[in-house]
Image (cartoon, rainbow, N blue to C red; front, side, top):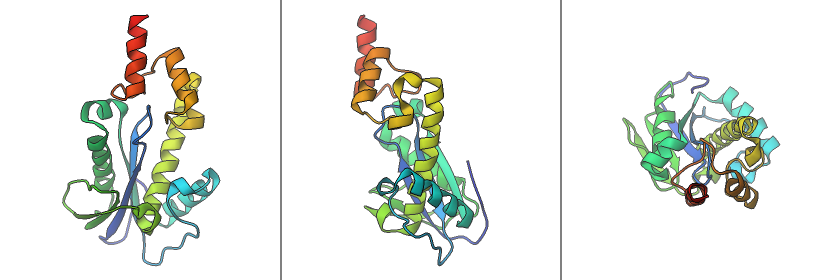
Length: 199
């Protein structure tokens, strides 16, 4: 998925959301911001209210030189492991950017491979504007997807916890077993599958 494009080669901020949930994809975003981009209150998406994230998401998409989303599905996470799947989602996001960036600033300790230079920044989602912007876009996009999944499988409450292992989600998993969007390689899901097979 890609969005607004234009401008010259530059530096892209990259971040992901969805490493910890028991269900759904891991979603990454890559954003190239113009010099002097202004979005008051922009910071790590986890520190923002849902309403503020959505307002910033619109501001970023409208004002960025380029932005794009990448993803790895639950089945890919199970096949590759979450670390490799996260890097794959980031790689897909960066590859979807037009113009292509020359350099990446990536939240965390690891960077995706590709025809670019890259720098990992621990805590970058709270200190580097382009990474903060990527965190906001990724979070808003993934939360929207989990609300859509709730329409298919309302018994799990995806609209409330976005797939994270809350007590309510764990209880629903034990009661109903996993749906196709659950990550089979994650412990609570594997245990629910095992319990269902023994029943």
